[in-house]
Image (cartoon, rainbow, N blue to C red; front, top):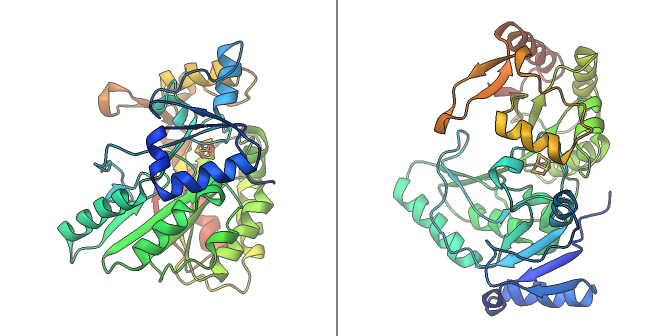
Length: 341
Ligand code: SF4
């Protein structure tokens, strides 16, 4: 697939006083993309569209270039100590995506140009914990790889972390546009993960993202560039023929990665889940989705902030977990399964 190009770009005036802001302004002007000004990246007005749905779709192809003012990093992630904020929002249209509820009425894509401030803050966190390792997750609120061909912020973050003693970086993507990242000086401190799924899930629920084959080809390149490689199988979804579908996924993955050094390969397994607010949003934005959001078939799990989620019932979840672990054992006997949740 072609890399993402925004249809409309907004700039905060202050962003233009940073080198990356200037560079992006020139780039988008040369590309002939419509540019507007916004006082704040948190309050972008005037995204075109007659209906809410049309505005949502247009917002997903709108890029906002701003300055990140809140430098405190979120620290509530299970697989990393901190989320490093390089971007917010994504151009993908995955029906189940949790950003639909977490970003609410701001689905446009924000990128931040004050990278030095962000890296200085990351360094502070690293220093506080040293000599313990501090892990940063770069894809909590966006699919950063999918936007990075425009900004190269992720590339800079990879090189920044690569130069630290105690920092580590991780992120996950559904995009294949990795070429500019292959020569980054990562020094083995970045884990590059791809989100993968059965063909059924990718074809039905992940429009606007790279294909199965595109992601696998990119994973091969990334492994070849010496990055630590990982796969996030998510959301694991019980569609008709799921056992066959996931078997084919692992079989094809093994075939594509043949001959690569996979001595440090990780898998993360996440079953499909949804909340009531998410269900409402999904039904509005993707009214024709085949995603099964029937609460009566699920188990309710209490969550933080009083918003519980619907996961598979215990025996169904167990069956998913056992099946995935069996396939991984069969095709990737040396790999490490970090968790099933
Ligand atoms: S690629 Fe990831 S962040 Fe983007 S819409 Fe899909 S699930 Fe959401």
